[in-house]
Amino acid sequence: MKKNRSFAPALIVAAPFVILMSIFLIWPTLTTIGKAFIHEDEFSFFNMARAMSGTYRDSFITTAQLSLITSLIGGGIGLLMAILLRSMPVESKSRTLADSWSAVASQLGGLPLAFAFIALLGTQGILTKVLEAFGIDLVELGFSLTGLAGWALVYLYFQIPLMFLIMTPAVSSLRASWFESATSMGANSWQFWRAVGIPILLPTIVTGFVLLFVNSFSAYATAYALSTGAGQLIPLQIRFILQGNVITGEDELGFAIVTWALLLLALSLVAVTLLQRRVSRWSEQ
Image (cartoon, rainbow, N blue to C red):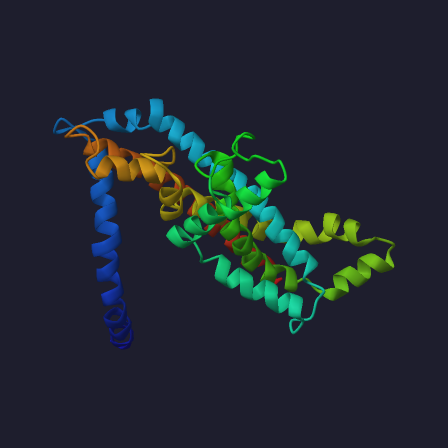
């Protein structure tokens, strides 16, 4: 009876959250997955196969390339920033500036970020015109904010600070005694990070890369503002189909694309969870 009484308050508190999750997340997800396997009112893998063919397969590849590029470059720069700023006092101006910028920039996306880059590096952008005055024509060089390179540059603006925020606590938790021990044995800074620091941080680094990959793969508003037409990214393809810009009755194709995207993101989140468990086990030792 005591166990039932103690369980009841927890159930009452959790009930609103469970209800909201069921209405706005679980039920829509199950509905989407169910419709992805319906073709001509029958259960079929037709839509799932079509979602991985032709233009849609190319969109998955382009989106994956963009996510991989921005997660590797953004993750590498964010990790390097966390390592370089580790030795600085928390009260230092450089550390305060980096923390403040990262907290803001990691959450800055969508239309404001896209328009800022359009004003800076668009066809009539300020920096574009300045470079033209020095004989550097970005258009002739093939650079465009509506292409893979342009998307990657914009995405790095929020990917780098996000990785910095992820890695800063882990890098700060490294014990000074470890570096002192390595130094007393003749190791320099590079040897310490290669043999000690990076291996210890590896689970967190991989976790950060996965989170950055998911963050880039699912970004929509920024890509939409930078793109024309349906675009070549999966979030834009989903919008294009589900808003009725294709032949009537093609909604199931959009649901199939969403299902494939959900599967990829779910696998990424499972990987993050497993890596976080490894990190927690290491920190308890």
